[in-house]
Amino acid sequence: MFALVTFAAWAMALGSISYTSFNVHAQTSNATCTTNYTVQQGDICQTIASQFNVTIADLESANPSINSGCTNLAIGEVLCIPAAAACSSNVTYVVKDGDVCIDIANMFNITFAALEAANPEIDANCDNLSIGERLCIPAASS
Image (tube, rainbow, N blue to C red; front, side, top):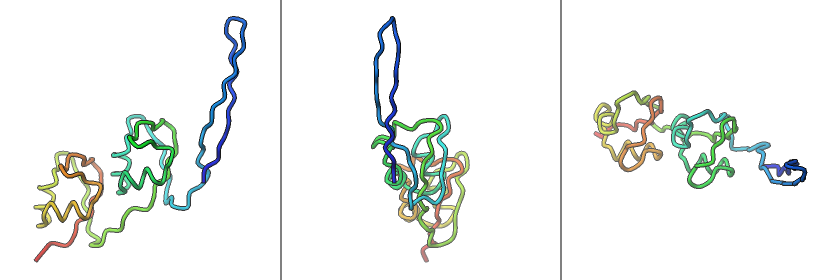
């Protein structure tokens, strides 16, 4: 649920007074939030989503204030973090510096396709891994 708050700004410049009003959507509560996250300098949707093992689409859905390109995050903004998708195998791997998908897949004797299917936040080129991101590792095929 969001509350619409109207702010009024008065400015005095060179003897004239101008009045501007603008609306701000303030998040009041959201039943899908499992936690909240405060945006820090340098944050982008992809790294926030990866940090909490959710998709960018889920992050945007839980936070209607985020635009479709995720170019409007503001430092100090509090985001709703939805529940992460459950890892069906209960095996996870934390991405380290230098990791690439094919090496992670080989480490667990799975295909890249299986790794990608278990982690929908991974893009088709696997160029969006973030250090510290937790990946779900599906069971190895026999």
